[in-house]
Length: 107
View 1 (cartoon, rainbow, N blue to C red):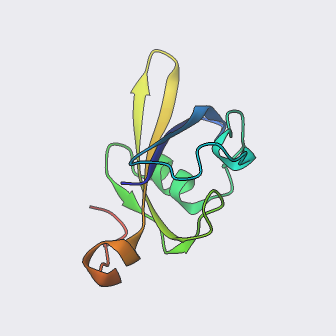
View 2 (view 1 turned 90 degrees about the horizontal axis):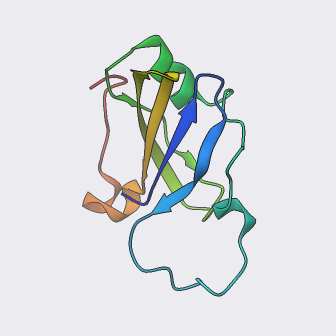
C-alpha cells in the first residue's frame, strides 16, 4: 500500500493522504500530498465504489498524481452516520510481483 484516503458521498477528500513507508523527500514541498478537499467524483474508483456498496472495486492502472507512478486504486463504500464514505487504497503494481498483478473489477 502506498496511500489511503477517504472521500465523502460527493467525492470530496476528507483530510490529507495517509502514506506508507519512509518518505525520502519529506523536506520537499509537494502540494499533491496535501490534498484535503480535492474532488475525485470523476474517478472510476469513486463511481465504482458507490455502485457496488461493501464490495472492493479495482481501478484500471493510471499515473498517480502525487508521485507520477503507475497506480491501482482499491475502493469500497461504507455507510456511516455521515452518509456514504468511500475508502481508497493506492498500490503500485510495478513494485508488487513485478507488475504482474491484475484484479477483477470487483473483489
